[in-house]
Image (cartoon, rainbow, N blue to C red):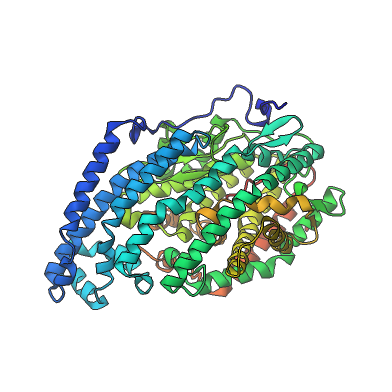
Length: 622
């Protein structure tokens, strides 16, 4: 017999947490506006279809080509917006009801209809990529209206050499919804997961949260319960992961991508050399960062080594400080306001309106995200708020995304779409602002706990995400030789995690199936390095802000408002940053290490973790 999780394990008793209202999109899945919007989108796509072949026919006529490009891309964006409205509604509604078969069917059926519409627009990008560079540039010079699309055209043409014949491109789009069902299976399996822990049935979010409990016995019980639950679902998760990896291998082979990560680099508009330099710098820093920290933490806790369930344990007995929703809201808004009033205003709009869903509950997707919908609609934020310091920072993280998405709205959906390497900058910067506020308001032992938590947050954002990236890289390399069983995935996970955590953390066999809850491996292969990329960029941006607080805010707002119109190199030039060089990342890692030493000195004794006071589990971003 099982019982529900106690309210005290989640948020302060009596605390009311918001649920979103999606009626700004549609009233229900039976809303006739869904069909009306689909019909309007279908009409726009048909209008666009009349231009098929026109771009090629306008070669040698820059003025005419410019007019046709502006017309065609405008129609494409308008139809895309309507499709995104429906897609966002289905995805958002299903994300809080993963145990509802009705929503699952609605989302899958709508995805298939959207794919059919999208397939009719494929000719546009294919024709654009048949044009020569000089032809497009001549058209851009001939018409200012057309020239505004230059950044989007640049991104479209990045995949030029990897495009297939039109019929093959159509085939991939048509079968996309069926392939996506493997991700759906993965998500629904995690949503149904229940970890049996001391007579309770904990959801994934609740079980992960329990790993930060001050009581070592409760942490261990949660770890064992979650391990058993993940081991039970591991065959399903392994099948989904293996199948999607095989699908990717086939497509990558046809598209002539040299490596499994190459398509992600192109989507992010980032040089492979920059990511390799980032990875190398972080791995080189493992011994002096994560290995060193966890060995010191084990010593502080009186252990020869940390058990894996102690890795994010509080460093002191007693309950860590909890924050009710109104406190979290005030902390975030005050911190954002110190950067610039406009940042706080945009975040306040999200919180004042029913655009945030914070209440943890069965059937709801674990983790957190900010969904941008389209440029003509506001974003929505999901999180599972449990009243801890980490949850306050997660709120800041997602509202950072939401502010970024709002700032980029005026330039439209296509131009506002931001590569992940810059998209994560705004969110991590938001966390940094709120941490500074938390630290300013803390006193005594609480201040020491915050500094310890900051170190662990940095390890989880930089070191852990790079280890995830290395796990993916090795998995995809081995998958090319055949499927990996759950046990083989577990062994690979243990090897890579052991490398990053060092001898200060004991990874017993129960940790082996924990790969099975990292949903980014399924939804967005090789996404995770963007977190480390963003975190180290933010370290540099925070330093720029400290040097010139008044001059920083306008430049930062311009960076966010530019959306995807600038490459990451162009976007960072005003700050004097060049992440293409290994020295930049090595310097960032050294700066992070120096920050640790500074924190240690603020604890009262250099090179020593904080004295007992409390910390919370960093709920991994993936």
